[in-house]
Length: 525
Image (cartoon, rainbow, N blue to C red; front, side):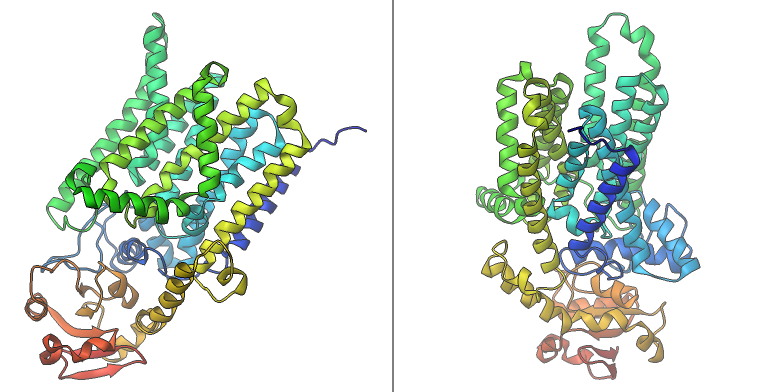
């Protein structure tokens, strides 16, 4: 019987059907028009707050602002390169504010990144099945399932780095200078969005320099190839120098721009963070069993390194060292901030390709066997199912197949049941309260105090009002804090949790009630 062959177009159609089907299974299209919600609503709201101000205030590109006003300041602060925030804000000026535009843009960038991972895999392995398998394996990460259509820039940076890696490979195999320029340009924007996206770039650059120094004539003939590398690094250093200067002259306590190393915390906190990293964050990063299977296999190849693909092995070693250094330098964040792990996902396809190239060279019959491909497909389906359960629970724990899944333990189910219930009784009303605030005479330029809210911008962003909350003023007693915020211009108090209304510190500020919804009370100060 003749083996059936597929055209490139047919393979792409099969791939996109599978990709879209998995995204639908994750609920990505159901959440496309949701605002900031669920895990790390805090950081989502910061991104949207910047976008909202570009949309409504016509801010210069390099002068972003947020709703939180600091200690009598202007809200000016900056984090990653604001190209997405600025672009979405300006699109909203034409279309009106729609969350789905923002989410869809980020989702399409992810889709493009995974498509290029497919193209890269096919170039390396020349096998249609594995070309489809590798990007879908990466997409089985719960981090990508949840953040793939979200508001954070981490997935965008990862996607650009993957596309850049494809062009680096093309440059290496075809000696095409334009592919090197494309690669460095893509890594430039990836690094401007998230510096951690440069791990592969550093690896590519280190191997390139090593090869140049190893060959006596290489520097004379290939010096021009250094220019895109150098240009990328200079522009990234220039950008981060600007952000440091901008925040130093405005608000520097909003976004992390320094290090949070392991040696600055106690032994007890190191142990606590390690436990949380392993028990809470790692399952969100990738399925633990599958991850350790890849790691163990990689270690086996490291021991038998002469049989491994030399370039991929070198890249994997360098990237692994970069990840270890990163974990040490930012260890303090790994108690809850799992999105800091997104750009570390590059090692999943890297390890997978290293293993598959080994099989292709030394055990090609295994790599091409139907039994092995069926086994891999079954494993992939389980990983996708696991990611779907974890993702959907973050938005709705009501579905029985999610609530009763063995993927979630009782504590997970109880937490998400409480979270969705609590949100409905506190922040939910703020999602649609902006017209009501206008009807009460509370204008966009009127500053408010929003309580309780320990984040930077969640409630301020939801109601689209500049002002203050509980964040950043812990050195002041609560009553004195409110008095200071009134001095800084706050005119109204918005309470989203009525359980605090019996607290003594708030009594003198709730004498002039001017409006209410089911769960939000509003007072004139």
